[in-house]
Structure formats: structure tokens, C-alpha cells
Image 1 (tube, helix red, strand yellow):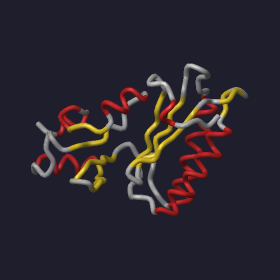
Image 2 (cartoon, helix red, strand yellow):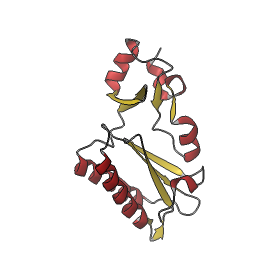
Image 3 (cartoon, one colour):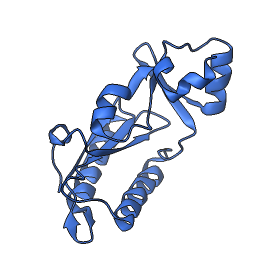
Image 4 (cartoon, one colour):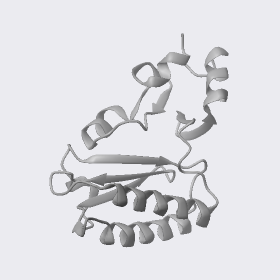
Length: 161
């Protein structure tokens, strides 16, 4: 059951998928349409899952699920991963590789491998004040408070010693 992402409770589970490039306007329209269809039909053991999504910075797909109504099952999580894998194929984009880092350079969103981000930290090309995206947040409250944070307040901090 598709609902407005902003109406989901703060305890709702979130999954964040970061793209290795920005989506075009036409891709964003198509992806939104596909997300609408997927979420409208997403179920766990035959029960609707109250879910919503948002796409941020033309690069991040954030799916939220109100687990107060129904929990996901292994099959429903598999279905969501297969959906994301299909988007990867359809748009020749990487959404599932967690070993990459996105961060802000002014208003631009940069995307680097973890190895390159480490090198940049050693070279002081990024600092503790660099705004990073902590895609490990697990619920909407954390997403709102701790997703877009200075590197010093994220797991990225370990590279800035």
C-alpha cells in the first residue's frame, strides 16, 4: 500500500540505495512510476505493506516501511532487492554496492569508492566537516537526524584520524 513517505511514522524502517551517478529527469519519472507500482503491490504473506519512498538529489532512493502495521518477510525483502536489481539493469546504474561513499562538495554530490575516499581523507581532501551520507540509518527518525551529517558524526570518521 503506497502512502506519502512523509506520513510514515518515525519508527518506520528505511532502506537507502545510492546511485553511482545522477538520474536524468526522464529516468526519475520512469523510476517513480516503477516505484509506485512496486510499492502498491508489495506484500508480506499476502498482507499489504504500508510503504512510501522519496528520491533525493536525483541519486538516492529511500524506501520507508511502517512496520507497526506489518513486518516484512524474507520473501518481501527478496522482492524489494530484485526490484532494485532490475532498476540497476534498466538504467545501467549501481544501487547496491555499499562499499562506496557519497558526500557533498558544495551543492554537488560526489561519489567515490571507499578506497578513494580513504585516500582523500589521508590527503586532507575531505575533512571531519565534509557532509557525508550515512546510508546505514535504519529508521525514519535516524534518516532525518543522521543521514546527512559531518563525517565526524558518522562511521566515515574512522578514516579522518
